[in-house]
Length: 218
Image (cartoon, rainbow, N blue to C red):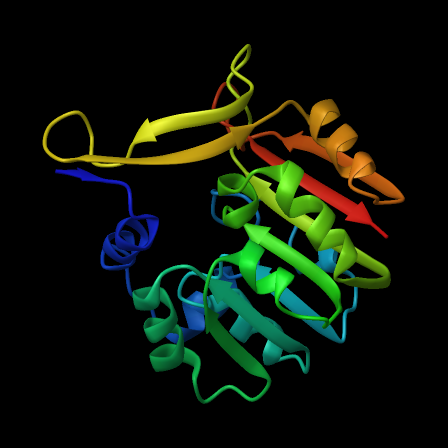
């Protein structure tokens, strides 16, 4: 049987997440890079009063923002992720978690946020031609979109497919979108953002994989 249900895939992924202490989870929640204590942090978001995370996982970043007084919402396709978020952070005032596809969620609301962000989340796994205009439309004037994920492999751009369970067993695949920084900037400007900066943050050790980070303003 061919399995292409992304909800099922992300539910399985949720079951593999480590469980650090709440203190450690909050400390690392808004690290855009995959390396400990490396690269920029929450300052990339500015000082929003409201924020929306696209693909919130267990909700650590949402809880970290809510703990500082931000009205923070996280959307995730996985019911397991959202259940874990409620278990871990349901007691944090101002933190809200919603199960759903980020595109459908944005299409179904008139709300606007001061900041929108994706920490190795939905921006990587959603067609930017669809998602970015919706993100721009749902940001308040002066708002910003921030996202991070792995850089593109040189020469391999656009939609990328991968078998999520490896090459043995049932067919489970996901799609990701990969572009060079200049290509991301062009996509963001075409989506209606006034200004966009995308760069690759170098890894702490030379020759290791860096982090693609984008910041776009309305």
